[in-house]
Image 1 (cartoon, rainbow, N blue to C red):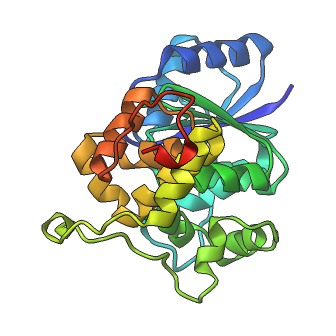
Image 2: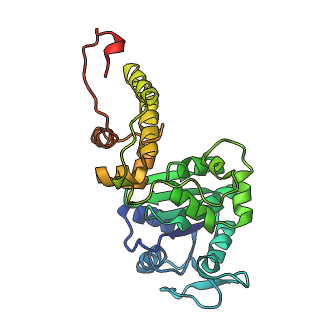
Image 3: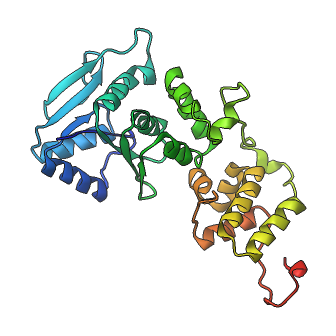
Length: 296
């Protein structure tokens, strides 16, 4: 019997069918479930397990009062640090659950830094977490800190900063102790926040021209049919323009754009066309036999 830490975002009030299937497997296997007491995903999981008449559940809460315990299951009270307030007060139970669990099942709204931080806590303890991205209907298995760093490097810089701000100094020190180059290098200048994108009124400023070198690199990647290099070049241009601006002009979610415009991204062709139009570029077909120097 394993102990499964099930958590998620407060903005998730309904469980996707895939999550319910996972919970059904947990129930069928008789695993112990540990879950928090918050509204949102915690409460939704409690409700589902109550409907299944499942008793092998422990509800964790910070402090002496449980906000939600729908099944009147056993309660595990966690004493938070004396000066902890707000998020840091309730995070005390999350750290305890990550320590006690064998595996993690996280239900993410695509925005909550707390859910992704719980995945990190599990990875730091050498435990596997399954992360369900509800809006994108995507599932990610994260087994190591490096895998977590790869995942979060595809998120926006604002989101990365939010995660760092909510992590404890010890948690973040363990992340930074890994010397593989990742987005974490952007914090090495001593600043608590990464470089910022253009402000919301950036659309009023003139659009900077795309450099000839970047266009040349993109054309070379297209000529060689190198999908990785193509997405890397487009991603560089989009980030230079400002991903917030690109998101507004394309109608696409910024976090989704960061993931799609990664060297390992696999966006739909329609997305690529929208982004190219936003950054002032277009694709042009030419006969294969034409000289490479005439490509657009």
